[in-house]
Length: 219
Ligand code: GRF
Image 1: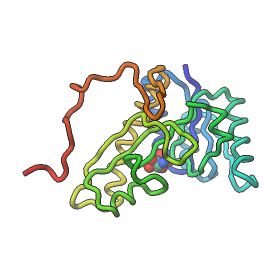
Image 2 (image 1 turned 180 degrees about the vertical axis):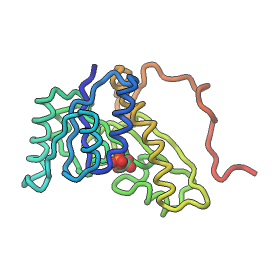
Image 3 (image 1 turned 135 degrees about the vertical axis):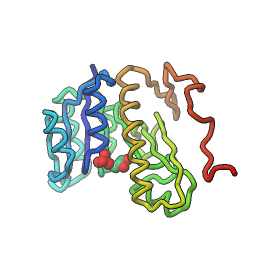
């Protein structure tokens, strides 16, 4: 059973999706620690409600990013964490962190990478006027929102959407794909091959609902 650490900064709805999937025994893992850089993060309450250990490490207490990351690595290692899930953790992590968990850090991003990396991926897509948007779970490498992609979900941008409605649609998809990515990792199904992630028991294409999403729909 994989020991999982989750890093958050805010609401923690993705953390909740992971907690729920673990509780339903869909993931062969256990969330052993939740860390936030913000003591007010609601995700800390979600974790405590489920008797999961929590820790707050404020980045403002550290002079450099590397010093901060060394503190995070120390507690994660002490807790025996094998997989680190970034779930709305609003900090850029340094090579100090990445090298401590090679191929063992994953992140969720609210856009279809490689487009719209950085903050507010949903807002970037909405402002740009894309017809589809989505979310991505990927391994973390030394560039922001860049590492090998595990799973993505695509949603249409609908004519009456505002940014909040679109963001909520994307978030509902995040809650589906993040647990699936963690499930695959914990089942030993993910193999990084250069830029690509091979899923050892890849589902057959026939399991797709539609071959393509066209938006606006053809008339
Ligand atoms: C999500 O949109 C995630 O993709 C992004 O930050 C947000 C976190 O939301 N990285 P929550 O804290 O999981 O509710």
